[in-house]
Length: 87
Image 1: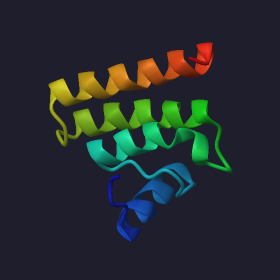
Image 2 (image 1 turned 30 degrees about the horizontal axis):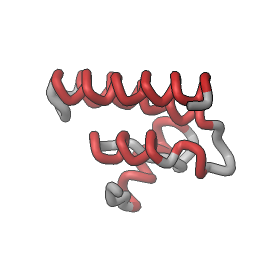
Image 3 (image 1 turned 45 degrees about the vertical axis):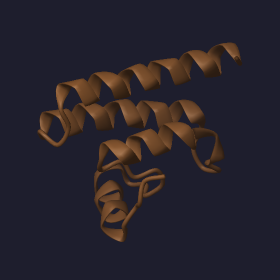
Image 4 (image 1 turned 90 degrees about the horizontal axis):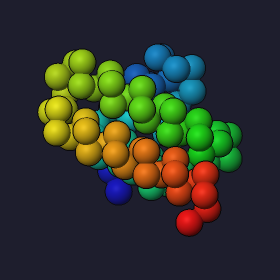
Protein backbone atom coordinates (compact mmCIF):
# COMPACT_ATOMS: atom_id res chain seq x y z
CA UNK A 1 0.00 0.00 0.00
CA UNK A 2 1.09 3.53 -0.68
CA UNK A 3 1.97 5.80 2.19
CA UNK A 4 -0.36 8.78 2.53
CA UNK A 5 0.96 11.83 4.32
CA UNK A 6 -0.90 14.66 5.98
CA UNK A 7 0.42 16.91 3.22
CA UNK A 8 -1.21 14.68 0.59
CA UNK A 9 -4.53 14.92 2.41
CA UNK A 10 -4.24 18.73 2.62
CA UNK A 11 -3.49 19.00 -1.11
CA UNK A 12 -6.42 16.76 -1.98
CA UNK A 13 -8.82 18.60 0.32
CA UNK A 14 -7.74 21.93 -1.13
CA UNK A 15 -8.37 20.71 -4.67
CA UNK A 16 -11.49 18.55 -4.22
CA UNK A 17 -12.98 19.58 -0.89
CA UNK A 18 -12.62 16.03 0.43
CA UNK A 19 -9.49 14.46 1.88
CA UNK A 20 -10.51 10.82 1.44
CA UNK A 21 -8.57 8.85 -1.15
CA UNK A 22 -5.73 11.34 -1.75
CA UNK A 23 -3.93 10.64 -5.03
CA UNK A 24 -0.68 12.56 -5.34
CA UNK A 25 1.41 9.71 -6.79
CA UNK A 26 1.03 6.67 -9.03
CA UNK A 27 1.31 4.38 -6.00
CA UNK A 28 -1.54 6.18 -4.28
CA UNK A 29 -3.69 5.86 -7.41
CA UNK A 30 -3.01 2.10 -7.50
CA UNK A 31 -3.86 1.85 -3.82
CA UNK A 32 -7.12 3.78 -4.25
CA UNK A 33 -8.15 1.48 -7.11
CA UNK A 34 -7.45 -1.56 -4.96
CA UNK A 35 -9.28 -0.18 -1.91
CA UNK A 36 -12.19 1.48 -3.76
CA UNK A 37 -14.85 -0.65 -2.01
CA UNK A 38 -13.59 0.20 1.49
CA UNK A 39 -14.78 3.82 1.55
CA UNK A 40 -17.80 4.83 3.56
CA UNK A 41 -18.31 8.29 2.13
CA UNK A 42 -17.58 7.56 -1.56
CA UNK A 43 -18.87 5.01 -4.01
CA UNK A 44 -16.43 2.80 -5.91
CA UNK A 45 -17.33 4.58 -9.16
CA UNK A 46 -16.58 7.97 -7.59
CA UNK A 47 -13.15 6.72 -6.50
CA UNK A 48 -12.42 5.46 -10.02
CA UNK A 49 -13.54 8.77 -11.50
CA UNK A 50 -11.25 10.63 -9.11
CA UNK A 51 -8.41 8.23 -9.97
CA UNK A 52 -8.89 8.89 -13.68
CA UNK A 53 -8.72 12.65 -13.10
CA UNK A 54 -5.64 12.19 -10.91
CA UNK A 55 -3.83 10.25 -13.65
CA UNK A 56 -4.49 13.06 -16.13
CA UNK A 57 -3.37 15.70 -13.62
CA UNK A 58 -0.20 13.80 -12.67
CA UNK A 59 0.68 13.22 -16.34
CA UNK A 60 0.21 16.90 -17.23
CA UNK A 61 2.37 17.88 -14.25
CA UNK A 62 5.09 15.52 -15.44
CA UNK A 63 5.00 13.47 -12.24
CA UNK A 64 4.38 10.17 -14.08
CA UNK A 65 5.50 8.85 -17.46
CA UNK A 66 3.18 8.13 -20.37
CA UNK A 67 3.69 4.40 -19.84
CA UNK A 68 2.69 4.65 -16.20
CA UNK A 69 -0.36 6.73 -17.13
CA UNK A 70 -1.41 4.14 -19.72
CA UNK A 71 -0.94 1.33 -17.19
CA UNK A 72 -3.03 3.16 -14.57
CA UNK A 73 -5.79 3.91 -17.09
CA UNK A 74 -5.89 0.21 -18.00
CA UNK A 75 -6.21 -0.71 -14.31
CA UNK A 76 -9.04 1.81 -13.89
CA UNK A 77 -10.84 0.44 -16.95
CA UNK A 78 -10.42 -3.15 -15.72
CA UNK A 79 -11.79 -2.14 -12.30
CA UNK A 80 -14.82 -0.49 -13.94
CA UNK A 81 -15.49 -3.63 -15.97
CA UNK A 82 -15.13 -5.80 -12.87
CA UNK A 83 -17.56 -3.59 -10.93
CA UNK A 84 -20.01 -3.51 -13.82
CA UNK A 85 -20.06 -7.25 -14.42
CA UNK A 86 -19.30 -8.44 -10.90
CA UNK A 87 -16.54 -10.83 -11.90
